[in-house]
Length: 276
Image (cartoon, rainbow, N blue to C red):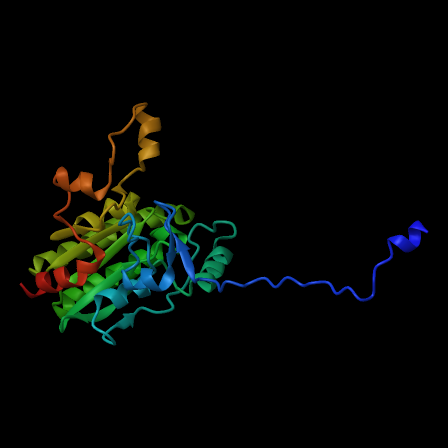
């Protein structure tokens, strides 16, 4: 009897619940204020959070599209050979994987473009490629960019974003600091303009070399700029650092940079500087 009582009725149809699929990339989350942002609105706002003004990191090709005249960019030094100068275990395989994921050859893109009709030699570093660290290939590409700017008598702009020298390349990575700095010295002797733009983060060997050697040094709001990170410094000196230490607002107060420029104003400011 009980067996029949719990029997399922053939006339009852089960309801199926349909789940709504949200396409990937439709929304993004601001890492500073945790606001959920519609991606299309974020793109129109130059990847700046409308809620807290946080300048979200962008890939170098997006950066170039924001700065250069449409269709004017010609990339230089594509497909530079990968190297593993100290035979670091698994390094080449890691580089190949990152190349496939980011669709970048290295942590910097360099080339020729126009801003407001004026030719410029430009380089943009990529935080997505091993945190923009500088190894042999990055140092070589930047040095060739500087030398080309010198030979062609062009203004030079480099958007810096880096975690520093690339530890997988040992001393070879540190040599790039001297190599890039020497190339900039020759560029300066020719009386040519170099504008360095510091984005979040600009640290380590990059900050200690070409990033801080600009004739004019600009920075995005809230960018972390320093040699060692704040946590390393606090652990070393055993003291709490001031609020906002090593951020671009702190640096401009202490005379380390010339101007903080919002991303939406960057092209306008650069155009004015290279024409003056």
